[in-house]
Amino acid sequence: MHNDVIKVTSDKVVKPKGAIHVVYYSSISNNTHRFIQKLAVLNSRIPYQLSEELLVNQDYVLITPSYSGGGEFKKGAVPSQVIKFLNNKQNRDFCRGVIASGNTNFGSTFAMAGPILSKKLNVPLLYQFELLGTEHDVTTVRKVLTDFWSSNDGESE
Image (spheres, rainbow, N blue to C red):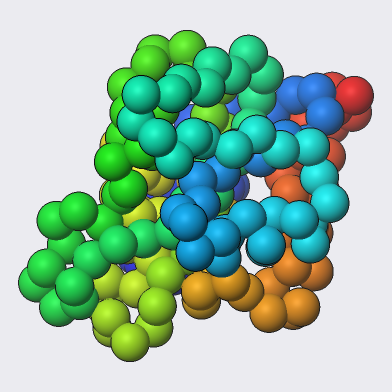
C-alpha cells in the first residue's frame, strides 16, 4: 500500500449504506471484470466507450485498474473512462472507497490509480491487487467490503 492515502479508521470517512455495491472499470482485457465476477456482489460496470455513460444513485466502492509506465511515469494511471465517470458530481458523491489493481513490475507506481483517487475523492484506499487477482485477493476483498459496510454500527441494510 502507498503511504499517502486516507485510512478507513479516519473520522472523515463516510461509511457506505445500503447493499454492498461496487462500480468498476475493465478494459477489453476483462481482467477486472473476471475479478468482479468472482466477488459475486452487486456491481455496475463503467462503459468502455467514452460516448456511453453510467449514473450511480447509491453508495459504492470503485474498483479500477491502473495504467502507468512505472518509476516517475505516473501520468495516465487512472483510465480515462474512470475520469469521465467521476467528472459527474453525483457519481463522485456516492463513492465511499477505492480498490485498485496494477502490475508489480511497475514498482512504486503499482496500482497507482488507487492512491490518486483516494486522495482526489477523499475516500479510503481499501485494497490493492495484482492484475486479475488471486483467490486470496477475492476472499480478502469480500471481507474488506463486508467489514466496510458493516462498520456502520447497524446502519447497513
